[in-house]
Amino acid sequence: MSRQLPLVRSRTLFFCDSMRLMSQSTESFDFPPSQPKTDPALVDLPPVEAPSAGFIVQLFVIPAIVVFVVILVWLLFGKLAGGERDAMSYVEMLRSPNANWRAAHELASLIQNDPKLSNDPRLLGELTDLLSHDLDREDNPELTKFVALSLGAFQTLDAELSGGRKVDPLAALARALEPKQPLPVRIAAAMSLAKQAARSEGKLEDPGAVKALGTAAHDGEPALRQVAIYALGFCGGEGAAELLRDRLNDEDRDVRYNAACALGRRGDLAAAAILRELLSSKALNQVVTSPTETEKRSKIEFLELEALQSLQSSVSHGKTELAVTLRPEVMELSQSGLVSVRNSALGILRSVPERTR
Image (cartoon, rainbow, N blue to C red; front, side, top):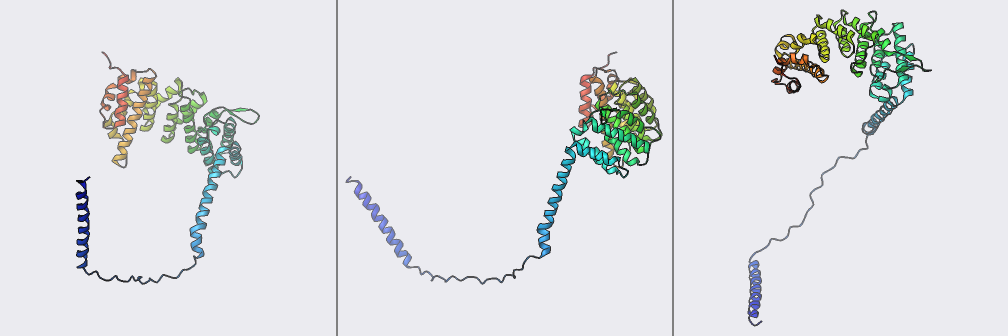
């Protein structure tokens, strides 16, 4: 302890000396007197005015009306899309003398977006009967067109009227394809038959529908022939295949392409020549025309993919001969700069062996 006391005392003296020096040093400085604080002058504010009626309307009333209308439309659409009674109300509306084609268009949209409606035999039966009735009247082709389109939105072909009486939607669509009907009605009927045939995955072999599509495929209007051949491509049976082979020499290039791709899905060797053209970027570049180069490339890509997918479909069903015949063209497309085309071609090459001599 005797050794620590001097250390403590020295530290205390050092602290006191330091404080005394600091006190002496500060006495030599004259600090300016503190300045009184003054408030800055207040800026004059504009006079406060009450909001005008127009401002209140723009700020509150108009947005409230918009929100109300949106909610009303949403509730109305939900009600229409959700109930069988509302769909039947549409049918009754379409049966009236003042029926409007817009109602048929709205009903077709509802059916397409509502699984319950698209599988309703009673609703399909009523629309089938309505289509037959409209075909007999022949006074509102625009309405008839949308009624025909609505039949293609159904996921079933089971149709009945009140009392359980069965009706045939395919027969009604075949009637709508008759040459005496307006072109828009015939095209709509062909489109609905195409949708129904595609859903059946090649099992639709209805003789009346196939015959009506075959007649339409020979008509003078290219637009109708294209859709009719497209629909026949999803129909089963040798009758449909024969009609497709007949259109491989059609004067319209799109009709020929539709027929070739449809036969390609069946593995039919009759389609080899047209498919070889579809699998050649050079050949397509010479025949495809579009307003812009970008659109032209997109269309060529689409056609090449359609041809490749038709070959892939035939291979997946165990029919490889056509794909083996066209293997050199597929091999060339496996080097395509388009990723989608290249991958599709490579997938076929992995499934198809090289032809052995």
